[in-house]
Image 1 (cartoon, rainbow, N blue to C red):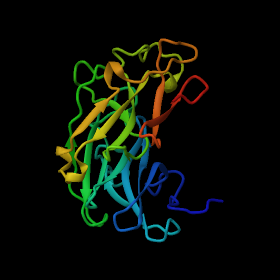
Image 2 (cartoon, rainbow, N blue to C red; image 1 turned 90 degrees about the horizontal axis):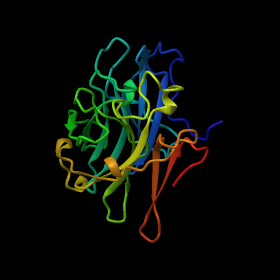
Image 3 (cartoon, rainbow, N blue to C red; image 1 turned 180 degrees about the vertical axis):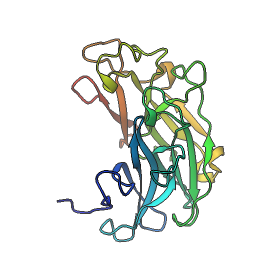
Image 4 (spheres, one colour; image 1 turned 45 degrees about the horizontal axis):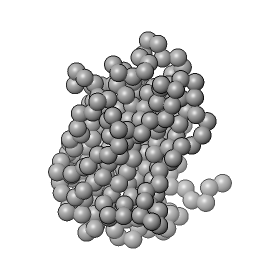
Length: 267
């Protein structure tokens, strides 16, 4: 049995529009509470989960939690709003809470709920109310759709952490567009685990200035042709590198581990 329970869905088959819950990120709120954002699906269709972003908080050190608060994405199974997935939090020095996420634009690359632009919102009252969503520009990558028709496929897997320079820093998974990937949809051998992927990094330069989400400044590193790649154990020219997780070391270096298709965790 778990020590603490944040949320129990009302059903297992989407009847209550809350059955699928994942990407659960807990962080310290500016008011001393624990806060969490996660991805919750209201239903599932032929494209995949119909995701939305929800928020909850605990004033009891994680023992009791508020009911999830809908932030963005479909309200219920009948709502045709574009899905929103894989949210992650950042808290400014003055206590503004930002939530950023992958905002689908009703288009799919390899995978529907990986595909989207970046968007964000914020709260200045500890999560009681939230700003309207705003788009956050992402640079065109060598791995992007060369036609510009389909947004990138990317997921920030963990919550950003303060790096030694006190700026928020995080790694993310990026999937290579089919037009330049090692395999395409016609010849990929065995599903999503063979989709070419790399690891890149973002540093959020001005969160402590409390910018509007659209004005958040992001510096990218190990990006594009310099992204981290890990050879597949059966096909070394194919990179499978995903879900980077970072900690700061005592000597001010950063240490990162990631998921691979080698049978090992790489760092």
